[in-house]
Amino acid sequence: MQSGYRAVMFDPADWHSHVEAKKQIAEAARNASTPGFVISNPITHARRYKKLKASADPEQAIVANLVQDVTSIKRQLEHLQHADLDLHHVEPAVEHPLRREPDGLASRGPRNVRG
Image (cartoon, rainbow, N blue to C red; front, side, top):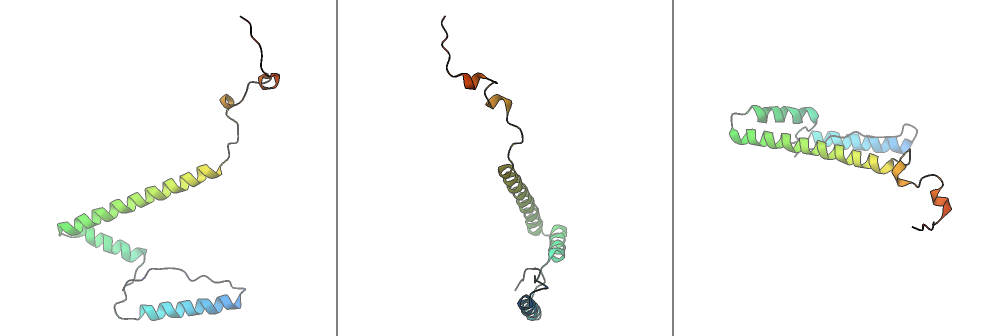
């Protein structure tokens, strides 16, 4: 059994929040003391990855490379998602000069040109 890691959040000004946080901490302690519990956090992940990468077994080396590639792809996707969100929420500060009518032309209306 493997468990993720997380923080227990609570509002110091709210008594019910305190009670709920205590319940969550007690549950986490019970889970951690069950047989077969595997600690999972960034440090244990790094240690497992390092062990895979240093393995003499070629299959484990392939798995380590795949883990590295997937991690890199995830970071790139997150970066693109944040960049995309930033672009959608930013309004242009200056109007593009080629998108507007030259001064005075738009108010004159159509002109007849004889030639």
